[in-house]
Length: 178
Image 1 (cartoon, helix red, strand yellow):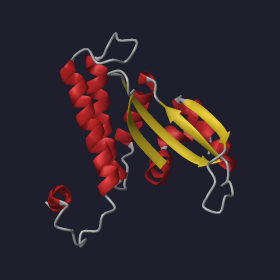
Image 2 (cartoon, one colour):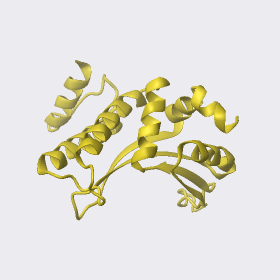
Image 3 (tube, one colour):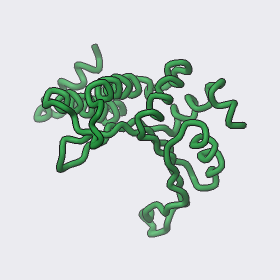
């Protein structure tokens, strides 16, 4: 696939459905947030990641070692393509709006997209990416928590029998079933 093919096809959407990750990053010591899109693949797919970077921007982290598995053997090296610049994130949003995701990752994209628009609209002129007000920081934390909740609780089976001492999980399951 050539660089020009990406913008006209659903290829990146399909790859994202399987391997993509939408992240709202936060610095622990300051009220700074960062919108991040990432795809990690085995290092033998570096050429694909390079094509994606050439077309959509971002950074490559090539051939880093994964941690050892339970047997103490290192897994295959991985590479990652990460996009976090405002212009590149907005280019990706334009792409995904034209080529929708088809998996459950579409729910994550909707939250991430809304957070990106809100954040970029209200943190204009802030080189440090710090929100200009406390309400924006609170809103970004709410989006971040909702994105984490989606990722964490999506895999819980609907017929899961709950222990009586987990009422918060029951509430989440009730929300999920509505």
